[in-house]
Amino acid sequence: MTQSTISIDLPFHGARQLNARFDATPLTSDGGAPLLAALDKKLGLVDSMVSALTDRRDSRYTDHSLADLIRQRVFQISLGYEDCNDADTLRHDPVLKASCGRDPVLDPDLASQPTLSRLENSIGPKACYRLAKSLFRVYLAGHPERPKEIILDLDLTADPTHGQQELSFFHGYYDSHVYLPLLVFDGEGELITAVLLPGKNPGGGPVVAVVKRLVESLRERWPGISILVRADAGFASPELYHIIEREDLGCLIGFRSNPRLDRRARKIQARARRRYLRTKHKARVFTSIRYRAEEGWSRSYRIIIKAEHGAQGPNVRYVLTNRIGRAEALYDRYAMRGEACENSIKDLKNALLADRLSCHRFWANQFRLFLHAASYILFFSLRRHAAGTELADAQFDTIRLRLLKVAAYLVCSARRLCLHLSSAHPWQALWLRIARRIMSARAFG
Image (cartoon, rainbow, N blue to C red; front, top):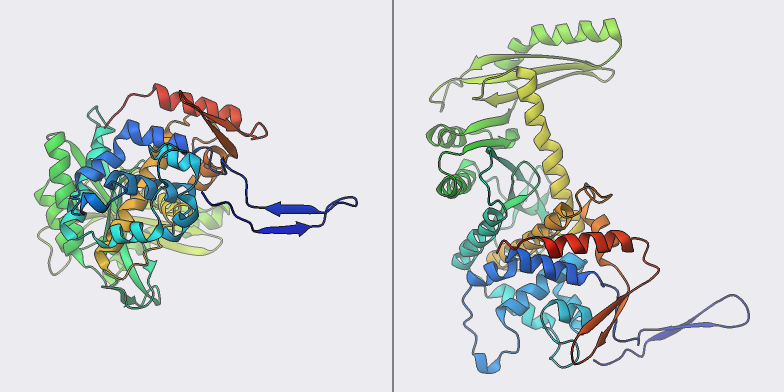
């Protein structure tokens, strides 16, 4: 590694100046990276992704295997370095090299930005389809026992685009050119799949295709399992209702207001208002009705109506369902998806910067989304191992700060590598506790 000669003098207490320079080695600011390597090995995550790809490069002229490249990219994203450009310096990091399976001293450095960029732009639609299946296999492997029910929480988010990116379109709601990733979580916040959609309104077709494939795969693994689809009103469409009926799925789907429904809601809206005026506390009143649209519906559905009145005035919401039970309980179960999806998307976009889909080619950006999804899987597993600790419900950026961003230096000998983590790290007891849990967990891959 070529040491940096950049230095600067800074004022300091007393007569002396403080000279700062980037020339220390083998130091790292990411001493927690081996935790990612341990989780990857337990989950079989990168190996599963590599099994979906074909390496068409000439082996005589390659220094990095596909596993090396994907592992490096996923770990860099997890450590907070989302750009391929970051590899130009990180490729020398001794702990990142060791976490990616390379000898920190004897082996060549990790891949540079051009090598990683060539990988991203070599991926096509068939490879992306296989990668989606590989990530789904990792999800299934993490659930060895049959669950009572699987919840499919559907949500769309917007990733702003720039320049002449393929299949980028202007979206009026977001007032920007965007891509629209379709994210599917399992009700607990675990990511099942992430499918990149063009920036125009996708309609029901792509969503139905994704739901259909997931249902087929889930019931191939667990025949007859109960599956519930939850989604906001943006997903309400006859196409989705049709697949729900055909596959015998449960549903809790937000529904937009219309004059017919608003007329039916007036009585309970007035009841909620009277209750609020009497108690001066926010009042909620629930009921449900049978409803069928004039066109496109093969049957009627139950619509749950929630009328709420508080200091801000009235608020009426509708949810379509085919489930039986108390209207309030069903509505509250629907409302749980909002917090779960929003927090999960925040982790994916804010902490893991999954909206940095800046390649020109659409399929290169889908591959990037899978890389960020793989990083999400690592962090979700890391948080699961933190159950019962202060990080049990922490956001991913907090987990990164406390477990991964640790100053350390690496000592290499013929027999072992010794990672010396900072003795001043405030969360060292927590770090060791979670590391021991990871090492004692059984492998899923």
